[in-house]
Amino acid sequence: MAGIEILHSEVRNKIAAGEVIARPHSVVKELVENSIDARARRIDIVLDDGGKQDILVNDDGCGMSRADAILAIERYATSKLKTVADIEHITTYGFRGEALASIAQISQFELETSDHTGGTKIVVIGGEFKDIIDSHRPQGTRVKVSNIFFNLPARLKFLKSSQWEKRLISDVVKNYALINPSIYFGLEESDRKLLDFIATDSLEKRVKMFFPNRVVEALVHLDIKVGAIRFTGFLTRPDFFDRHHMNYLYVNARPVRYARLYRTIVNAYQNPKNLPGFLLNIEVAPSMVDVNIHPTKQEVRFKDERYVLDLLNQAIKTKVFTKVVQAGFRTSTSVSTTPGEMMVDRKFVQETVLPYSPERFAEPLSAQGSNEFWQLHDTYILSQTKSGLIIVDQHVAHERVIYESITKGKGGSQRLLFPITLELMPEEYRAYKKTKLLLKELGIEFKEFSAHTIVIDSLPTDARVNREDVVDLFKELDALGNLIEQRNEVAKVVACKSAIKAGQSLSVSEMRSLIDRLFACENPYTCPHGRPIVIRFSLDELATRFGR
Ligand SMILES: Nc1ncnc2c1ncn2[C@@H]1O[C@H](COP(=O)(O)OP(=O)(O)OP(=O)(O)O)[C@@H](O)[C@H]1O
Ligand SMILES: [Mg+2]
Image (cartoon, rainbow, N blue to C red; front, side, top):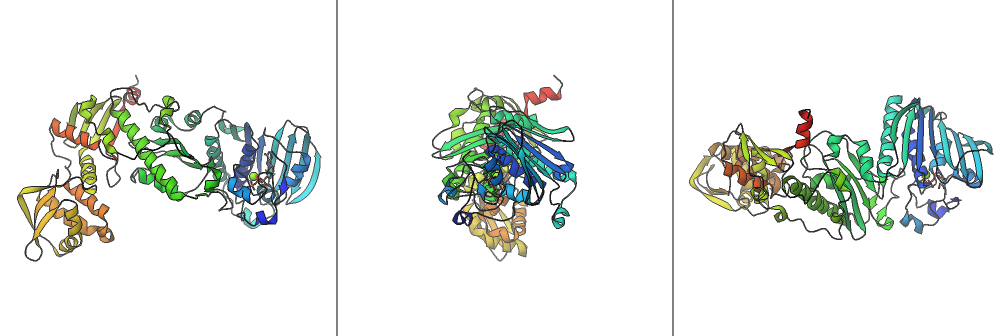
């Protein structure tokens, strides 16, 4: 690493300053970042009392000369940034030259480091140098931080139980370990290993060390490059509704909190009630992202945010959804989602993302080799697929089909043989007045008679309703409250009321047609209200359950 220098005041003034160390886990975060920036291959972290007593981070990185080690503890001392222009091109985790100075200020601090010129040990207590001596250690750096906040009783008071602090530290280590698979990470306390991640050559292998099998099996690999932007990582299949704690976002391998990015992913999955799991890294040219907006360096902003988020939305829809639908229902072996094959799936890396088009997998399921359907309790449709069995909730499946067809204006309407005359209650009539234009757009047509009496003579093609459903429609529209003017919300109610209900018996050809149309939908996995539509059982899962 190039030598350390104290930043010029004009550079300092451009750097987001503020609180750097809030609790033990911030110390671990900063030290681990430094070790990775120093190109360490191995990082060992040892705690005592959840980090409240001691935090020790040892690495085999490039180490520091004596002069650099002394300078490193000064404020604004960094080897990672020199000029204002460099702020636009940050490729390291650190850049402010603040971390070691802040840590040394609030603890009893020991830095032991060695580069090719020899070793140094420095002791600093509450910001004051106490000792600088020779040290004999292999190349690398070891930082020991003891009695954090010993000189700030007001801050000490806010530390929680060691169990709690340890959990936060463990989350920090996981966050960095996941995205740096080629580095060994170990975390231990009182000779007990809490985390132990051996170095590996791929993100996929690291992911497998982290997450249980059932989550790994549900992951789809994403690797897409559009111009200078690359999205890599793993997302859960849209039909995976299990509990998990997979929520990892990175920009240029920096763990970030980025609410809009998070929302984009959840929106691409159409807001399912069970949130999708993801580990996603977005690589962009350093000049395209501002990392200097918050002192903790965890918040970043893309300069062309809309563009990046739109691409991500497209990427999830074209790659994750399409791949899953194809993998689940093709009889050929054209697509695989097994993790072992994910990483070699480089054919999905491409220069452009195609515009999303559901027609691409609109091929009828029956034509794809699976044409066995059974109805369970007149409520669920069971069907055999290439890799096992799917169970489809007939009501929400139909709801999704109608919702997409009416919101996209593709559905049209069907004239009723026997128009339905309704006398509406005052609140239903109010809902009718507010929504009648929207309802027409969505395929419901009517005539008005006397006050509060309307005759419905057309409904969306495909609607399966009786009189009660239509009465309920206006009740539910009224219950929308302030949302009643939103087209999507009205469409959800229309779709729900028009859809086949649980308890209705379906013929095999009706089931086949419904399933075919479901998998031609943009999102066949969650209903407009966010409930799952399809549950999958793989043959492997069944075999495990049966102890085969
Ligand atoms: N583990 C390490 N191995 C080698 N050099 C290190 C290590 N830790 C710190 N340094 C050196 O000390 C300098 C100061 O570290 P410090 O963490 O205070 O600042 P920074 O990493 O440059 O910026 P930031 O405050 O954003 O973390 C670094 O720029 C780096 O040159
Ligand atoms: Mg640093």
